[in-house]
Length: 252
Image 1 (spheres, rainbow, N blue to C red):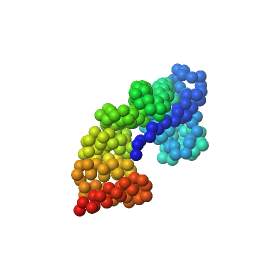
Image 2: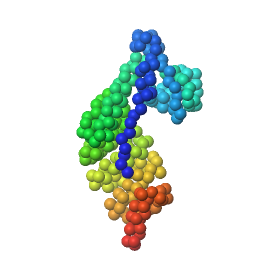
Image 3: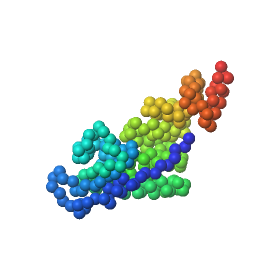
Image 4: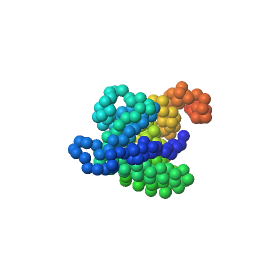
């Protein structure tokens, strides 16, 4: 159940930089965009997600929809071309995000080759360019785990879950690094947080049961194993869960 390093897609941001019209970053009157780019909507995108991609925040989703004469409550149709107004500040931020994404991908390449020390350097550099690049923070923590620097990973993840509390994967990773430090109670707490976000998060449910066993909470562990097996009955992990449950039941 190891977390896999994931790549960030640069196409959306790159498209913004190469399709800018109107002579580049020229001075404009107050309230006018420095440039307007056209973005082709892909399946699954919404005004909020597009706003996050181009502005780093969903807060401008309604204004973006209004700029396109659309209803903010209705996602744009896939394949539709929508106009994205960018101020000089937006363009500067977009530049930084592109630089951060490129550095981040260098870190992913190094991590994939097993050069974890080099990957740490790149992920840190990416975060200096864009502190909101959460996947860089996440993979920095994963790399620390690979290096056995669990305390470092925990520090990064504790900050990350405060910034993005709706991500079960981040809570699971936090619990995982606490577990490997022998902090089973705190690990269990993080796994429960993950399950609060996603009750079907199998990794967290499995890890919670193991943590409960480690703490001697065998009755709770049995209940957690049963919950796990209701969701996963035929995988390799299910076989292990079933064996652990049977062992606990034999102790009665």
